[in-house]
Length: 233
Image 1 (cartoon, rainbow, N blue to C red):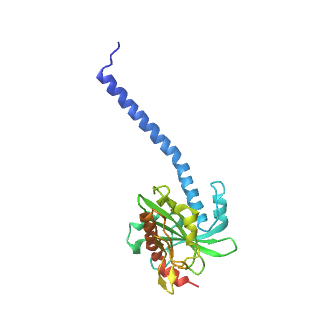
Image 2 (cartoon, rainbow, N blue to C red):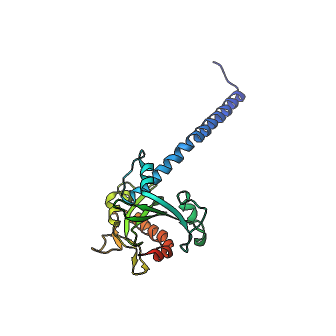
Image 3 (cartoon, rainbow, N blue to C red):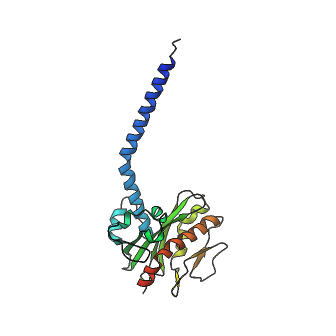
């Protein structure tokens, strides 16, 4: 039986480690553009779904160009920020900054029927990780036109239900303001009071995710309070 020296084994192992690391690095570099494109398309699909337009990976870019016709970035006073691309703003990074330093993206769309709506991105924390999405508002800057929510790792059948139509459709027509006071939308365990324009039903068994989503909506949209009040019809 042939025996290999320790030197041979160490040399062979080192070569294999370097080879595998090189191949993995090369694969990651080659795949990076495709991954970035997939994320861009998914972002556009989610934004479109918040204005109740269903899109596929194949037609998302075409529909995005059709429906979403303007984007801009605001500061916390509702004033425009120049030289910042709204689509490329990473909300999680902005949330680490002081409020007065944050860039707040807004997207303007023309929905089916010709109504002008704005789309605002939101991001927060669920039970197991990030939750995020988009809230679209009618031109009165008060009434929710539609929403799209998603998550990284919420429990299937429980918190993961935030991205189902059954849950999201409850937000349509809900109001953010009572007169000029920002109220937002509460996610109510046990069921929202009938006819209440500021509340929806929580997810059964998903209380922590539901409350995290409620907090996400309030914390993200309150930053636009000055802009919304200034532009309300």
